[in-house]
Image (cartoon, rainbow, N blue to C red; front, side, top):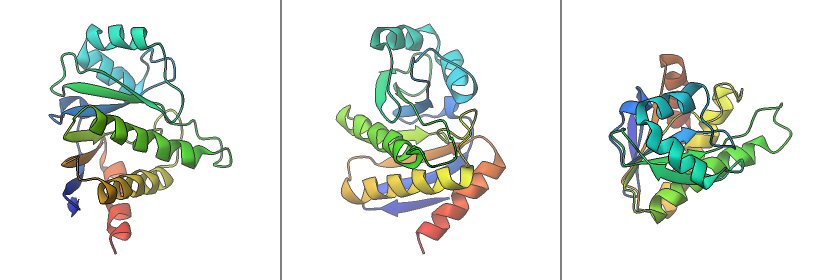
Length: 177
């Protein structure tokens, strides 16, 4: 499923983010940038040791912020590491932090001259963010960014399973009506 906003295509696909050929892929990282489970572990395994070497030099990343490294052995040139919030019921600023993680990843991509970017469902795995809420925040943030900036040509949401894809697709349809 895809739409065009301003001059940016926003697309939702069900695929493996480590196989993406966009200029950058986003890693749902932890604040120590030490690798981990889920998307984070998959990106580090597929990208090889060059990514971890740069992460060690950077040292860390606060929740809601983003940093960039090489793509290593990935098809993507860069990995943008962002730290989403751990979901603790929704009353501790989680929504603002999740939106910030997406927004700061987009801003960093533009600053680095990236034309296309792929996102996973940030915070929806071990961090426990409810997918319905996360999908709305992710898509709304990306739509707002595309409306205000035409520098990114493609923003892709790469979702690992059909259930998550269906939720994101349904939210995008709602946002566009």
